[in-house]
Amino acid sequence: MDRIQPVSTIGQERINHIGRNTSKPLGEGFGDMLKDSIMAADKLNKTSDAAIASFTTGEHQNIHETMIAIEQSSITTGLLLEIRNKVVQAYQEVMKMTF
Image (cartoon, rainbow, N blue to C red; front, top):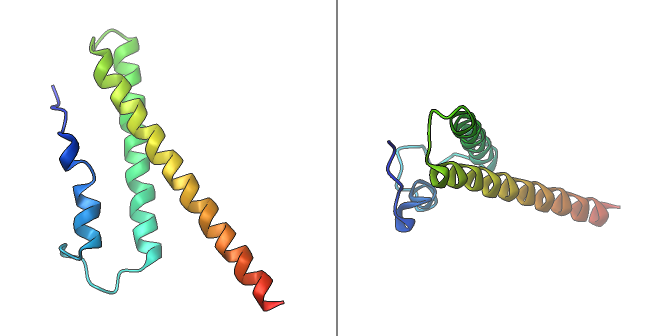
């Protein structure tokens, strides 16, 4: 059974990335960060789907872990959608300035 991480450690990887305490080169751009975030969101979605399937088949009886996986997936997807919306909005504003 997987252990639930304490709240203080959630997102620590992203905090380390922002602080440049990772082994990735300093030249990593926004596109690479966005690609990594999308891949992480996809992984959470797959984990959520697996948790739902496991719960519905009766293989796994813990509803709490299933709900946590669903919420993590939902929050991550919502965050990515908001980032996308802000990027599109910024692009539209830049395009307004050029004309």
